[in-house]
Image (cartoon, rainbow, N blue to C red):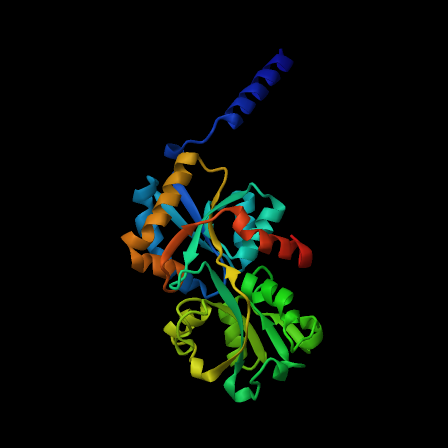
Length: 306
């Protein structure tokens, strides 16, 4: 009798587990915020999602989770504890290499010039005497985060192609390299003299004196944390695919459709909210698929792996 009861309970458990979750059964949507700037600013910039999304999605609450680093959001998406996030291309590549079906990239930003990419740039303090990449040989290089595209992967891959390095790896060309906890902290480390040169991200569009139209440089200029007159740009990478907004694949399709529609409509319905969460000026969003990020996936797999 006990054996039969156990079999029935097991069958019931399997049936319950297999029953799909419906969109109307969801009360909370959890949004991951990758590192890169301080937590208070990330929460403030994304508060409009907390205010607007519940009504659009038919949920009681939207919760923001500002991770200490990029990997916190990556692991949250892989583990199913986060539902939505904006990622860098390398962060998405890390998820894809671990589980290609974990998340679905659905859109990315379009720059004011119509491009769908941005740049890694290297900065030095103007008073350091470092005016060119050749001058930076033997100096201390600051990276942003191990999972940052512009703050690590792209400099690692493309710097050796510059004539100044002539095929040398960054670890060979510079006397020391370090990770400094995100883009904002990396630039602050430069300004504080902890590193001699630092990489960060920017649109590369618009005026250098304004920190360009978007990116970490523009964000820091707007917050009064950086005066571009104090720094010199030593290097700019080739165009990098703008990172995607992603949704967890296992969400109900109806909920995924609502989330995607909300984000796609945001630039026209509330540009201020769109600009705040994306940190700068853009034309809007464009749809993307995993194929758009295949070069970054391949580059990450070949260099730093999953």
